[in-house]
Image (cartoon, rainbow, N blue to C red; front, side, top):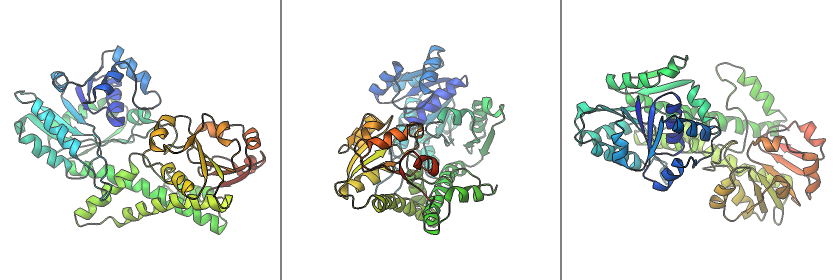
Length: 438
């Protein structure tokens, strides 16, 4: 099939490359000419393991194309157009800003004027329920209704393992009131369904729209829940990892997303929980559980600063090495990361902060411009009063901590990802503190 991706951000680019891997002909369109020029030079705007090789491979196979010219992209004659543009949250209300979605739908429809081809417009961006209905109205005012259909196909990609997630999904969700659109999307995903992966086909687009927000809202709830229990374990003298195992082995609960940390972040959970809460309020059916999760996560990040101060003492003049800046490992994404809350608060309390992240140095220079950045873990820890781990990078797990401890002024390691066995790491000469492990 012939596929057009609108937007070459994380979702659009990864999805487009993966569709090409499946054998479809794909053109990725973006209004950002400089981004397209880089992609034509095989330069990725994001960090994602395996994506560069897949990009080069499919360009050489002539399955994958890029353009910043809309008419050229439409001339590709796509059967399906995926809208994969930003939907940033309104800072005050939490509602998703859908300006780019609606603008993309309008411009593509205008470019299709005069064409008799049937085109399926698919919202791949994470959007609140009701967005597809508005997209349907916008397009119907431009081209005949019999020439198009609108569908929702939410993404469930995890940064750092996006290619695997796309090719090995728990399920593919597609929703549309158009039977023709459902058939086309079913054909598009046949390489996955033939391999045994489930296709959830909803006859209302609204259901598909709600599935994505509901899934992320539930997972965010699990994260906030285990983080609160980790702090309770510290008070009660219990062990959070044994507790997580004890409840996670219950099949009704499951073991995933039960690892304590400094608070969830990234491009999905914060934005999607806020948008779900805002949508629910606007429809007169408040999602009070989700609103509480948002509050809990915000408070948890601040409690991590308090925990650090309890261990180190008065932070005024103390040197704190922060290890890891991204919201999770294997990505350079710092959006809504715990580091963006914790580091400024450490500085507000008088600490001198030096950071090290193996991937996100360039991103950090923009998002944390007033923080000293080290080029190595050794440089970050030299003379430090304490080290604070915020991201679960493998480099931190496999470092020589006996040697690193000797570089520190005070060998205190505050591990907010529980990367180490407490007995083993203490034997290396460190005062070790983790989450929920007494």
